[in-house]
Image (cartoon, rainbow, N blue to C red):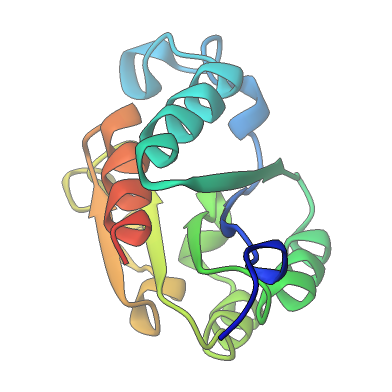
Length: 150
């Protein structure tokens, strides 16, 4: 039996790819007016009732995103991933997601299947546990709640 001080809090990683730092100003008719800071707060709020915390990050660089996933793959209780444009071509990102031993949920703010045909290709989703798309900020909170529930 472990002592209370040795119990580690559950951490859900929420990692974001290219251009998501521009939420709120980039194509608001598609992505809405919410900023990435608001997405982060919503994720924290969704995790809190379950006693989980959020490791929230964003990068415009594929290699950095891959490094982050490798860094946390065995220490988090789940991973929410919005690969952004990397969704449609990154076999390297798909390969690293396949190594994650916990559940990974890919999220998209928009419904990628209702957009340009090339956007329907989702490499990380091929190896992820689930996908939530088209719900705007709700895509993130649904994924966080799912992972936080265990």
